[in-house]
Image (cartoon, helix red, strand yellow):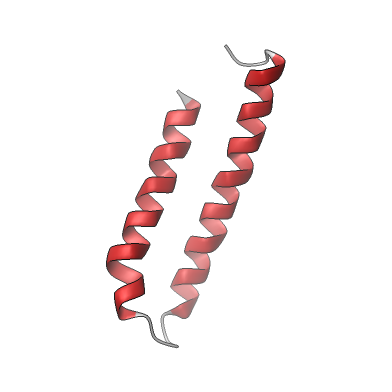
Amino acid sequence: MGVKLLLAGTAALAVHARLKLIPNLTDDNLSGLAWHICGITSLAIAFVVVGGFIRLGGLG
């Protein structure tokens, strides 16, 4: 279930960035894109941790 939440969060951030941030990107709202990049990076790290737990048998 955790992987599905991580995947949904990643997809939600990607869709929001693609449809709302990138088409209207200026110097003023560049920090919003930076927050999205930090969020995607955090989710990617969480994917690695959850994948390691699954691989080692820590999560069923």
